[in-house]
Image (cartoon, rainbow, N blue to C red; front, side, top):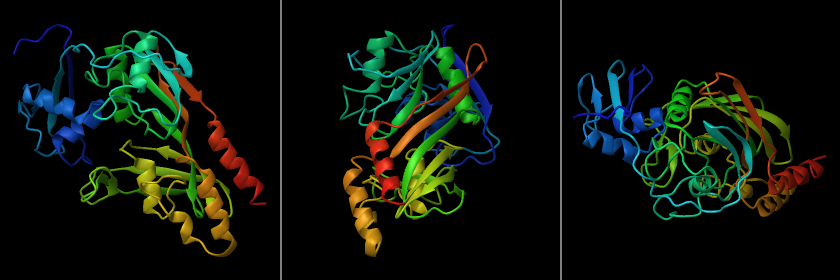
Length: 322
């Protein structure tokens, strides 16, 4: 296969803590979708120890992965004039304070009205390494999670930021309202994978990928705790799954914490019922983002206050917990 000069090549050795399917592993490491990696494998652009890789084989520690990412195809997503809260922008990247309810990238069921559609209108062009459906996207936020997200405007920036994520050099901190008492700071170190029966959900599972979340309680209320959550890894729904796994799901998270307010007794039960009523969406906000600039090497730090509906919940919980 003859490669064009603008084809990007990535090579690395699979670390000791890696496991699971190779396509899922490569997708997470490069910040690509699994379908995008599957297409690269079908084209023979992914090799494992020098031979053409198969998507169903395992990510074997110590093996060498070699990936050729071709120049991007034209994006299938259409630009749309959707308001954005731009926190920072230069010729390499853009940092957005995403509102809750905004889907990050186009997908079946979400062909329009996404962050990608909005960025294509605002920026005019984005890195195509993420594929036609998710150009520029380096990492994701769930639809109902608000807060800071960075998108790449160039392929070079995209690869640099994806590598920094893989090497855990991008620091992400969230504000989370969790049910119950978390107590002292806790690190949840449990693997996450697709739920064995409910395919739209993730779960702590023995065959999952390594995942680590640090929870730091800030305030304890009648039946909930305000926490700072820091990601050491970046699995799908990681904070939500880990919080639910320790019995303190995110308030307003109907996928992993539905009905949790009914688990309290006495006055705490009434307080929890009212909190559940006023929490109109999951109380999770990406409040801080830190990384080195892909071109200048400058340390970049961004912070965003939680949106009004989350501020209202926090204020109510404080006032009623005195």
